[in-house]
Length: 597
Image (cartoon, rainbow, N blue to C red):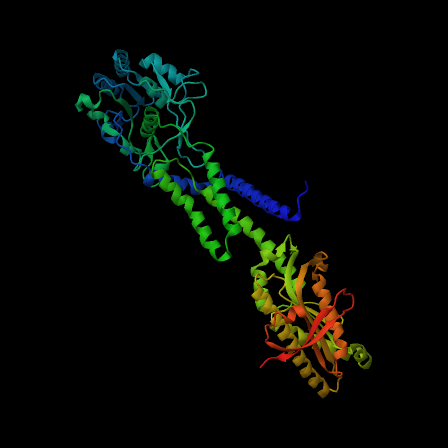
């Protein structure tokens, strides 16, 4: 079944809004993807979240960090590589306390003093606790470093300690538990040693508020022999460098603080593996947030008045930043706000641009149809209610009840014979300009000129909603007719002084139902009134010829329908039931004489 034009317009509008929603959402997502410079705003927000809004976490009691500090190195004969005899004693001291596993984030890539290497190898062979040492890359395939660590130092388990560093800004955000060959990484291998299997997919590292260093007990390596065994028993001990400038990495939590040490990053990832906190934000959630924010922007721009649009848009743009921070602080997912804000802004901008184009088109149309022939109050009302008046770039066909006014110059044919073309045009232009101003002053709308005739309407183009408004339109039309007669007398006085001929006018008024709409298209579109009311008004005006008592007499006739709405405020003389040309039934006609005192 074919859709009517009235049904097609809402569908077309909905299609445009859906298109704006889709395009704005796609643009917002694309513009914030790295390497876009806009992505830095999201990264800054991410850092703020982790540093100041991350949910508070108790200190982890399953992991301890044994740090090789500057004070530790000061007690050793040389700084690098780490003294193997010291490491042997450290491992023995840790193993004596029976931790679950020991992780060594220390590079074993070459031989040192043979006696110390043998001491280290002996210590590794005697411990019963799982010891996992870090490798620069996955143990498979075999490398010279890995072979040396296994054969010469007795390290039975190696795991890749490489971190995922964002190439765009050098920040560690995610952790990859397993390498491309399926071998577990450093934290994943320690988790397996503790009986917890890590996920196969990469996951985001969630940094505790205040930085990862605050989440773990940290002891200097040289003090381990003096620690109570119960502090180490059943824990996973991670040994690594805490020396400034060594193995430091930038993280989202370090933007407002010092960089994080590699051993601390591994400990943070391991804590998430042990606690099962490795589920990342669902991949559909971020696009859904963008679509929702964009939809809100589109809705705001499509239904909100201009005065409220700016304040509403500012709130909408800030809402993701505030809302996502509050959500994250309550333990919710990590969502980045730039894409939703952009989506809301772009979506609202698209709709406002479209509405602006639509308004300019409607304004041009109204100017084209009514131009300077409506008063300021009517023009404001027409623009304010343009949605009810216009549809699809042209006036909406509608039924209304209004009063039409037809006026004509009596004896205009003889006037044309008496005046040369230039004075005639000046005379007629002065007459029309004066009469148009009278119509406008009485809230009427001049629709067209037919030679020397004027067609005006009271009660259009916006339909009246009550009988009182229709009555007021009829009264305005009659007042306008009387004012036109008075204006004609003043014009005749001017013309007599200028030695130009004067003239009289005939005015016909009638009130009733009309069909209002537009004919033509483009530059030739014209607002028109159709129906018996308009035809009757024209016939009443023509009927007034027989009542003129002189060449400058002004005759105002009104139909019964108009007279009945005047409520006795005007002096009128009933002419009677008359047969008008083209009418099948007689029409009661009244001559308007003036206002009642």
